Length: 333
Ligand code: SF4
Image 1 (cartoon, protein in one colour):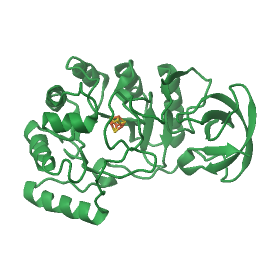
Image 2: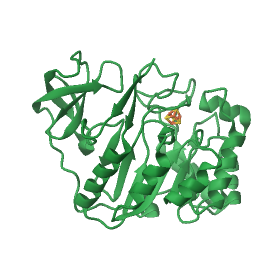
Image 3: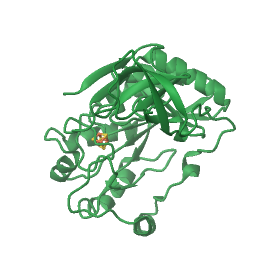
Image 4: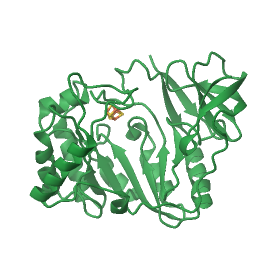
C-alpha cells in the first residue's frame, strides 16, 4: 500500500529531490514535477513506478500555489527570456488534478516561452484537450509504444489500457494548437515492427507542428527499474544506425539533439549547496519515495536519506553521497 504525502506551502523545499518539485540542470529547460505515482505498470519502467511496484512507497503531490511561486523564483533567478517549463515526473504528471490550472499559472510567468509535458495519455480525456490548449500548453510528449491493442496492453502492464482511447487523444491534440511528439520506447524483440508504423502514424495525424514529430527512446535496463525478461538492450551504436536508416526511409528527423528543442545552457544555475561527502544535519520531514528512505531538509533544500530509520521531526547527521544537478542523496553518518 502506498503512502500519500502532500507537500504543503513552504513546508518542504521544492529543490533537491527527484520525485517532486523542480530540477534545474543548467539549461533554459526547467523540469517541474507536481505529482509522482502512475496508473500504468509498463514492463520496461525505468523508475519501477505504478501499482505493481514493490519499491516505490510514496506518492507525492505538491500544492499548486507553492509550486508556481517557487517556479517563478527559479525563472527570475535564471534570468533567461526563453525558458521551457517541462512538466514531467517519476510517474504520470497528468494524475495531478489541477494540471490545467497549473499550466495556466506557469504561462503567466515572465520569461516562460514554452510549456511542454510528458504523459502516457492514460488519464487525459477528450474534453480535457481544449482546456489544456486554452491554458497555454505548447507541446505534449505522448508515449505510445504500439498501435496493436494486445501488444500495447502488454507493454503498459495493465488490463484496462486501451490504445484506441489513447489514439483519440493523440489525434485531438494533433488537431489543436498544442504540438504533439510521439515518444515510443523501442524494446528490441518486443515492438520492433511497431516503430515504422508509429512513424507513419505520427506523420499521418500531423504530429510535429513546431518540433520533431517523434522522440524514439532506447530501452535501457536501469539498475532500479523494471527489466524486460529475455531482452538485451540495443547498443547506442545500433540504435542510432537504425534511426538513421528509418530517417532515410521516412524523410523525418529521428536522431534528436538539444538544438531541435532550442535548449541551451543558461548563465545561471540554481547553486548546489552541499558538497559531496560533506556531513550535515537534516531535519526529517516525511517518507522517502523508496522503501527505507526519508526526506530531510536543510539549507533550503530537500535531501533523500537512504537507510534511514529516523521519524518525522527528528534531526539526523548525514553524509552527502551525491549532489548532481542539485539532487541530493545522503546516508546517516
Ligand atoms: S508510464 Fe512511465 S512511469 Fe508509468 S509505468 Fe510507464 S514508464 Fe513507468
